[in-house]
Length: 553
Image 1 (cartoon, rainbow, N blue to C red):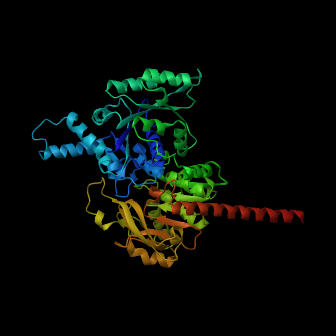
Image 2: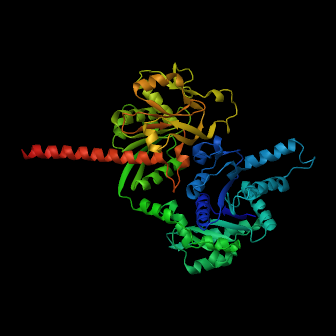
Image 3: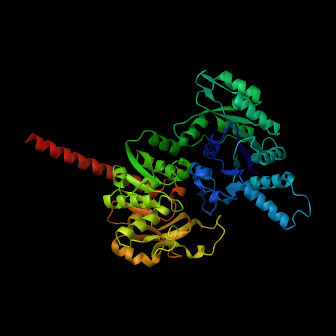
């Protein structure tokens, strides 16, 4: 049977449970173990699809079309394997299942309670991936913090499972905080002690403590933590702040987290971890040979997690190109026709991000106009691609009222319109065009050269599409629909062949970019940014030389 690892958090949220879980999974995978990770979230939403990005960060989409927590993106980026609907469960989904079962009479008139009915359903879901036979080890991250009211059923479910599975089949890793008081120049263990005490009061004791800290944990401090938290001293793991999340697996390797975990699971250590590719990536990331500046035009730029997968895909692509990618967040609401050129002309490339709703739309359109007219490399994703079509229709096709029916239902030139199969839908959650779909790329197009293929599969999350009624007009004027869904005729990609790099994709390529397989679209985009920077630098040198010559005369 599979072995199970549970990762909990204490003291405060946002300590990085997902990164620790993904780092441990990477080390176990590198030792030859088939490993997967799942996330259990304590909120009552059925999935993150209807959550505002300001509330919860981006909604990550899996191959099978599940709208999930952004941590699943970390899992895929670290492990280079796909996750699915089964890898993300919320309290809403748990309660929905139990209530539906009660309505169908499945409980035969019994009183339905948190214990045992809710906890039994949590346990069933926790064991589901392990029962498939595909994995040796299943890591489960529990969202929230120990002590939260909404987390109590999950803690209780883990307590029961630990008893049912036995000590060598189940390990609990507790991530906690050791704050550093600068005024006293002292690390304090009391918050960690209180967190473990609170956990113990709920009947669950950690086997391993991972301690987030700004400063190194000296031996005496580790001894104190072990003594008062009732864990072995070698099970107190230091997790120092890292320069990049991709450095965390190497730090956990030094701390022997994988070895301690395998010992507690009574599993052989296997081969020494093979992390050659990971190390090569880290070296390129840490020691770039150049730098480019990318303007990220979006409406949620105040919260970095809203565009998490895009930012990580840019990091992957930067490493391939051996250059540092500096992202300038530019709020689309602040862009106007009067100031757009001044704000954007210094950038090496422009990326217009996905989103929903009318807020900031005109700013996105202005950014796209500047990129098209000034020859700045442009990449538009989902809504970014749609607004590229609107901009082209307005300023090149001279359809002044061109828009998307999402923002302007009565527009006379609906170049973007709601998909036919979406028009009768009233339930908003989980009903968009979601997950992986095939796309055929036009022979001789730039996008076919980027992928080095004519058939691809990418993940989607949208309700609106390019209106094929305008396809011929666009192509005649110079914007080519170079990627088409073979089943529906949906335009997936547009490009302007005469532009140095102008590509819009209806799908979300960022979801499929991983450390070991950076996405080719992002790699090509960063390469184009480097080339644009070099051209601009060359032109500046020529101007200076010419001025110098005139001065000499």
